[in-house]
Image 1 (cartoon, rainbow, N blue to C red):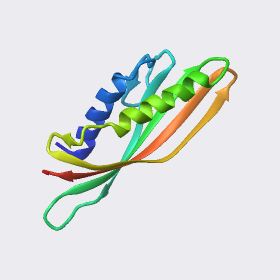
Image 2: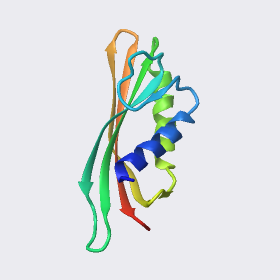
Image 3: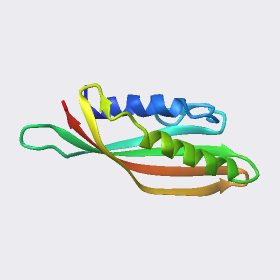
Image 4: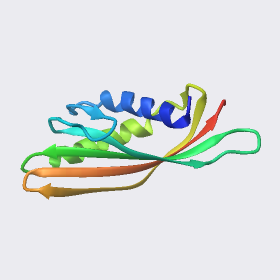
Length: 128
C-alpha cells in the first residue's frame, strides 16, 4: 500500500476517536453537522534513501464548528492535534519517523461559523 493511503487510514481512525466531533470526512462532506473534521489535500514528497522508499507527507486537517464563540473549536484543535501526534509509529508496510505541526490557523467564516486548519509534516520510511 502507498504511504498516502496508509497514512490517511491511520489518521481517519485516530480522528474518529476524538470526542466531540460529529464526523470525520476524507474530503469536503456533502452534509455534515458541526463540529466536524475533514481531511484536505495530502501532498507527498520523496524522502527516501538509496535502499529504501520514503515519503514526506503534508496533511491538511480542517475543523468546522458553529457557535457564539470559538471556545469549543479551540478545545477540538488541541484534541485533534494530540490525536495526530499520537499516530502509531508502526503502520502497515511503513514506519512513521516524525510528526510535526507546520502551521495552524483559525478564523470566523461568518457570524457563528468557525473554522481551523492544521497542516502537519509526517515523514515515513517503507518497510522498517
